[in-house]
Amino acid sequence: MTNNKPLIAHLSMLGACTFWGLMAPIGKDAMLHGIDGIGLVSFRVLGGAILFWITSLFTTYEHVPMRDIVKFAGAALFGLVCNQCCYTIGLSITSPSNASIMTTSMPIFAMILSFVILHEPITLKKAGGVLLGCCGALILILTSMTAASSKVGDIRGDLLCMAAQLSFALYLSLFNPLIKRYSVFTINKWMFLWATIMILPFSGRHVMQTKWAAIETKTWMEVGFVVFCGTYLSYILTMIGQRVLRPTVVSIYNYVQPLVSVSVSVLAGIAVFKWSQGLAVVLVFTGVWLVTKSKSKRDAVVTEEK
Image 1 (cartoon, rainbow, N blue to C red):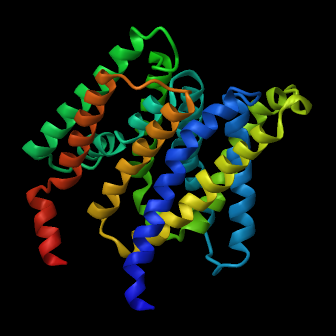
Image 2: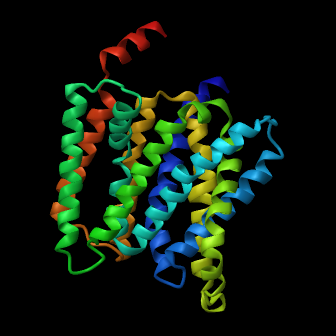
């Protein structure tokens, strides 16, 4: 059984990133057939809260002091509310291809924020990675600006999806000690609960005014996929993979998401992939690879000590 752990870890990461890749075209199709961005976010946070709280009843109980419960509110604001609202609403405007490509930029934002907030050093290789990633994002945005159809992209949606990655990078930088202290079930049950409390008072009336009877079964199944597979199951699979695999190996799986999303979106006819977007992908992927691969002198010392 021990020998199977690496295989299970790789399959778990592959499954999680595949689900996230499928979430963009499936979520986009749901938003084209009756569910808008606000509605999908509301279902996602409420569904995640219910599923993680139910699961926590069957896992080891962890006591969380009140000060950390309050901190989880801040973590939920950046890690879920701003992140999911920006991404989902951005996805409803732009193409699923552009949305998924933007998600790979998160390590770049995380590196910049670590430098600003945590004063971690930046190597020349990391700086080059940031420059390449920014060039790729700029090409993607310029392509969206001149696009005649949302199937190619929309600058508003692209910027919102980029803001989602900035928000998540802020969450990692500000609340890293907190999220290392607890299990994934404890973290997510409190974060999704806080996110539900924050979002539903503003989206509740909007959701109630939606004509639910007119929504087809296919669309409800797509919403179910986003909530169960794209949110709940993906978080669990990622946890399994991260316990065994090195961070550098885990980061490689980030590239699976846009590859799946772009392929499915183009085949389904809800996105068009142009050569300029292909160039953007190469630049962003290369930039992210340089950022995650490069180690500062401080990182090297820490690695040797371990």
